[in-house]
Image: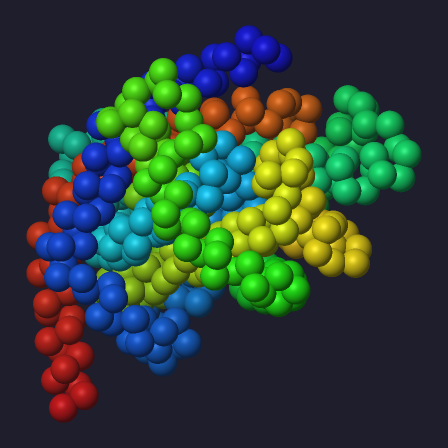
Length: 459
């Protein structure tokens, strides 16, 4: 296991360097400026589209705007919001949250462009069904000569879609919150039982395809976000006098970087390490620029690519600016980030346990639904990647590989799993961002056309 940890750590470090940071953040800023801050100017219209005001059941696609967003959110609102934020704070301090905010604001623009492209350049799989996602907007938008880039995305997309972090942290939550406090001995056998239960639950849903996944997601996501939102607000209410102090600390600590060793210089030393860590955790949480969300949004029923881009850009707002911030504040105001050595989901559980009666059990309910919802949508992403590589008639084979990975994740150390996914996400971002930047003029042209027609309709 130690060798596995060392290998995945080296893999993650190789992938997450200054070039990727420039591509993700610099590329996102480029898109934001080129669009003249469009995502922020049309938030109201995006919400109207999400509410179904412009839905047309006769449009091409499989699911509504709302189901596309909730399917995408069911993957992003997962353990990244609970264990990912806790990991960010335990390693990088409160300031890491500031850089997660930066990644979300930049990510709004990135998601607008990538998901608009997912509709603008939809392709057909080997069965003749319309599909969207980076692999399709690469081949349809840039041309067949760029297919190696699409293959690169699909290969790493299959690996990035494996639910290893979600399963690992759900197992950890069950062990730390339920089993160990009640005197149950945690072992390989108990972890295997948890994995097998998850296999059964996941199999029932994912073998039903995107329709069943989106139906589950559209019911689970709003409910689980609301429950988590209420619980954290109760915690913040109990520590209300601490909230302004820690909101300020998040900003000031973002430029202090006291948590990182001084002997490891990177892009200006420890500050560069903190920025990289925050952006990495932000990407793990909201997935902007990685290419997963466009695969969900590419299935939306719409004839207007811009509408889906507007809906997609709401993802980082909900995921990072709201849910991740709530988690960070709960950890900070309760002080557990300074008084315990816990990490990941265990640190968040400590905050809930300290602030609420039976808080750790209430968090366990959230953790379960966050994890299961992510399990469902990620399988869809993986099957789409395999379908692109070897044909739609063979895409179901991915589900068996996916189910086996649940067993692996439940019996493997957390650090190995999170390093593996970090590295794979980096290699998914490279083809997605390169193609998006190259195709940005097409999105801008389509945006101008759409908003001109929108103004004419209103007038």
